[in-house]
Amino acid sequence: MIELSPELISFIMLGGILAGVLTGYPLALAIGGIALWMGIYLFGPALTFEIFYSRSYDMLNNYILLAVPGFVLMGSVLEHSGAAEGVFEELYVWFAGLRGGLALATIILGTIVAATVGVIAASVTLLTLTALPSMVKRGYDRALAAGAVCAGGSLGILIPPSIMLVIYGPMANLSVGKMLLGAVMPGLFLSF
Image (cartoon, rainbow, N blue to C red; front, top):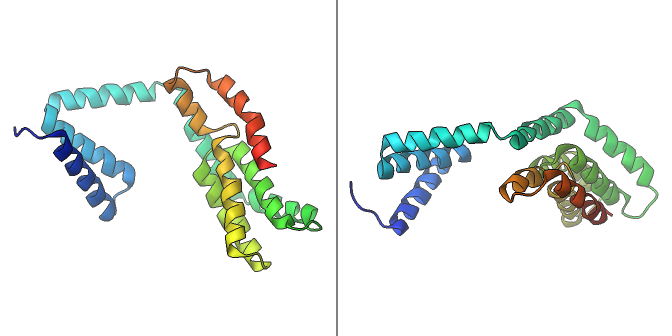
Protein backbone atom coordinates (compact mmCIF):
# COMPACT_ATOMS: atom_id res chain seq x y z
CA MET A 1 0.00 0.00 0.00
CA ILE A 2 1.05 3.56 -0.66
CA GLU A 3 1.57 5.82 2.36
CA LEU A 4 -0.72 8.81 2.06
CA SER A 5 -0.53 11.98 4.09
CA PRO A 6 -3.62 13.00 6.10
CA GLU A 7 -4.05 16.03 3.84
CA LEU A 8 -4.10 13.90 0.70
CA ILE A 9 -6.56 11.47 2.29
CA SER A 10 -8.82 14.41 3.16
CA PHE A 11 -8.68 15.77 -0.40
CA ILE A 12 -9.40 12.34 -1.88
CA MET A 13 -12.37 11.84 0.44
CA LEU A 14 -13.75 15.33 -0.22
CA GLY A 15 -13.32 14.83 -3.96
CA GLY A 16 -15.07 11.47 -3.76
CA ILE A 17 -17.98 12.93 -1.82
CA LEU A 18 -18.33 15.81 -4.28
CA ALA A 19 -18.14 13.43 -7.24
CA GLY A 20 -20.80 11.21 -5.68
CA VAL A 21 -23.16 14.08 -4.96
CA LEU A 22 -22.63 15.72 -8.35
CA THR A 23 -23.39 12.43 -10.13
CA GLY A 24 -26.72 12.22 -8.35
CA TYR A 25 -26.13 9.92 -5.39
CA PRO A 26 -27.75 10.91 -2.08
CA LEU A 27 -25.37 12.59 0.35
CA ALA A 28 -25.59 9.75 2.89
CA LEU A 29 -24.59 7.16 0.28
CA ALA A 30 -21.78 9.36 -1.04
CA ILE A 31 -20.32 9.89 2.44
CA GLY A 32 -20.81 6.27 3.50
CA GLY A 33 -19.44 4.89 0.25
CA ILE A 34 -16.28 6.97 0.23
CA ALA A 35 -15.70 6.22 3.93
CA LEU A 36 -16.08 2.50 3.27
CA TRP A 37 -13.72 2.54 0.26
CA MET A 38 -11.09 4.61 2.07
CA GLY A 39 -11.37 2.34 5.11
CA ILE A 40 -10.79 -0.72 2.93
CA TYR A 41 -7.83 0.97 1.25
CA LEU A 42 -6.23 2.22 4.48
CA PHE A 43 -7.01 -0.55 6.97
CA GLY A 44 -7.89 -3.56 4.86
CA PRO A 45 -11.28 -5.20 4.38
CA ALA A 46 -11.31 -7.31 7.56
CA LEU A 47 -10.81 -4.43 10.00
CA THR A 48 -13.04 -2.06 8.01
CA PHE A 49 -16.01 -4.42 7.96
CA GLU A 50 -15.50 -5.31 11.62
CA ILE A 51 -15.62 -1.62 12.58
CA PHE A 52 -18.55 -1.02 10.23
CA TYR A 53 -20.50 -3.90 11.76
CA SER A 54 -19.80 -2.96 15.38
CA ARG A 55 -20.64 0.75 14.88
CA SER A 56 -23.82 -0.10 12.97
CA TYR A 57 -24.86 -2.56 15.67
CA ASP A 58 -24.18 0.02 18.40
CA MET A 59 -26.25 2.65 16.60
CA LEU A 60 -29.15 0.26 16.02
CA ASN A 61 -29.13 -0.70 19.71
CA ASN A 62 -29.21 2.92 20.91
CA TYR A 63 -32.74 3.24 22.29
CA ILE A 64 -32.58 7.05 22.27
CA LEU A 65 -32.15 7.12 18.49
CA LEU A 66 -35.32 5.06 18.07
CA ALA A 67 -37.23 8.32 18.58
CA VAL A 68 -35.85 9.88 15.39
CA PRO A 69 -37.92 7.86 12.86
CA GLY A 70 -41.01 8.53 14.98
CA PHE A 71 -40.49 12.28 14.73
CA VAL A 72 -39.97 12.05 10.99
CA LEU A 73 -43.14 9.96 10.68
CA MET A 74 -45.12 12.56 12.66
CA GLY A 75 -43.93 15.29 10.32
CA SER A 76 -44.81 13.25 7.26
CA VAL A 77 -48.30 12.52 8.58
CA LEU A 78 -48.81 16.19 9.42
CA GLU A 79 -47.70 17.25 5.96
CA HIS A 80 -49.69 14.69 3.95
CA SER A 81 -52.88 14.84 6.00
CA GLY A 82 -53.51 18.50 5.22
CA ALA A 83 -53.84 19.32 8.91
CA ALA A 84 -51.16 22.02 8.71
CA GLU A 85 -53.01 23.86 5.96
CA GLY A 86 -56.22 23.80 8.00
CA VAL A 87 -54.46 25.09 11.11
CA PHE A 88 -52.79 27.83 9.07
CA GLU A 89 -56.10 29.00 7.61
CA GLU A 90 -57.67 29.09 11.09
CA LEU A 91 -54.72 31.02 12.49
CA TYR A 92 -55.04 33.49 9.63
CA VAL A 93 -58.72 34.01 10.46
CA TRP A 94 -57.85 34.62 14.12
CA PHE A 95 -55.07 37.12 13.37
CA ALA A 96 -56.53 38.74 10.22
CA GLY A 97 -57.42 41.91 12.11
CA LEU A 98 -53.88 42.47 13.32
CA ARG A 99 -51.20 44.24 11.34
CA GLY A 100 -48.85 41.49 10.14
CA GLY A 101 -51.37 38.86 11.17
CA LEU A 102 -50.34 36.43 8.45
CA ALA A 103 -46.69 36.61 9.51
CA LEU A 104 -47.78 36.04 13.11
CA ALA A 105 -49.88 33.07 12.01
CA THR A 106 -46.80 31.70 10.22
CA ILE A 107 -44.67 31.96 13.37
CA ILE A 108 -47.36 30.30 15.50
CA LEU A 109 -47.78 27.52 12.94
CA GLY A 110 -44.00 27.08 13.04
CA THR A 111 -44.22 26.72 16.82
CA ILE A 112 -46.98 24.11 16.53
CA VAL A 113 -45.14 22.19 13.82
CA ALA A 114 -41.90 22.30 15.84
CA ALA A 115 -43.74 20.85 18.83
CA THR A 116 -45.02 17.95 16.76
CA VAL A 117 -42.13 17.23 14.40
CA GLY A 118 -38.83 18.17 16.03
CA VAL A 119 -36.97 18.49 12.71
CA ILE A 120 -35.96 21.84 11.23
CA ALA A 121 -36.05 20.66 7.61
CA ALA A 122 -39.60 19.36 7.96
CA SER A 123 -40.74 22.57 9.67
CA VAL A 124 -39.21 24.87 7.06
CA THR A 125 -40.49 22.73 4.18
CA LEU A 126 -44.00 22.61 5.60
CA LEU A 127 -44.07 26.36 6.23
CA THR A 128 -42.63 27.06 2.78
CA LEU A 129 -45.32 24.99 1.09
CA THR A 130 -48.13 26.27 3.31
CA ALA A 131 -47.45 29.85 4.36
CA LEU A 132 -45.10 31.35 1.78
CA PRO A 133 -47.47 31.21 -1.23
CA SER A 134 -50.30 32.56 0.90
CA MET A 135 -48.20 35.47 2.16
CA VAL A 136 -46.92 36.39 -1.31
CA LYS A 137 -50.44 36.13 -2.75
CA ARG A 138 -51.75 38.56 -0.12
CA GLY A 139 -49.11 41.17 -0.93
CA TYR A 140 -46.34 40.50 1.59
CA ASP A 141 -42.82 41.39 0.54
CA ARG A 142 -40.92 38.23 -0.43
CA ALA A 143 -38.09 39.02 2.01
CA LEU A 144 -40.51 39.46 4.92
CA ALA A 145 -42.38 36.29 3.98
CA ALA A 146 -39.14 34.31 3.74
CA GLY A 147 -38.00 35.76 7.07
CA ALA A 148 -41.20 34.69 8.80
CA VAL A 149 -40.90 31.19 7.33
CA CYS A 150 -37.24 30.89 8.38
CA ALA A 151 -37.94 32.23 11.88
CA GLY A 152 -40.89 29.90 12.41
CA GLY A 153 -39.14 26.92 10.85
CA SER A 154 -35.96 27.29 12.87
CA LEU A 155 -37.85 26.75 16.13
CA GLY A 156 -37.79 23.00 15.44
CA ILE A 157 -34.26 22.73 16.83
CA LEU A 158 -35.26 24.06 20.25
CA ILE A 159 -38.89 23.28 20.99
CA PRO A 160 -39.29 19.71 22.26
CA PRO A 161 -39.36 17.10 20.83
CA SER A 162 -36.16 18.25 19.16
CA ILE A 163 -34.20 15.56 17.36
CA MET A 164 -31.04 17.58 17.88
CA LEU A 165 -31.46 17.42 21.66
CA VAL A 166 -32.32 13.72 21.51
CA ILE A 167 -29.12 13.01 19.57
CA TYR A 168 -26.91 15.42 21.54
CA GLY A 169 -28.00 14.18 24.99
CA PRO A 170 -26.43 10.70 24.87
CA MET A 171 -23.32 12.02 23.12
CA ALA A 172 -22.71 14.54 25.92
CA ASN A 173 -23.78 12.09 28.65
CA LEU A 174 -26.72 14.32 29.63
CA SER A 175 -30.29 13.45 30.48
CA VAL A 176 -32.45 13.81 27.37
CA GLY A 177 -35.55 14.45 29.49
CA LYS A 178 -33.87 17.31 31.37
CA MET A 179 -32.59 18.79 28.12
CA LEU A 180 -36.06 18.69 26.57
CA LEU A 181 -37.60 20.28 29.68
CA GLY A 182 -34.89 22.94 29.68
CA ALA A 183 -35.62 23.85 26.06
CA VAL A 184 -39.37 24.48 26.48
CA MET A 185 -39.25 28.02 27.86
CA PRO A 186 -36.48 29.37 25.56
CA GLY A 187 -38.30 27.91 22.56
CA LEU A 188 -41.60 29.52 23.56
CA PHE A 189 -39.88 32.85 24.30
CA LEU A 190 -38.32 32.79 20.83
CA SER A 191 -41.67 32.09 19.21
CA PHE A 192 -43.34 35.07 20.85
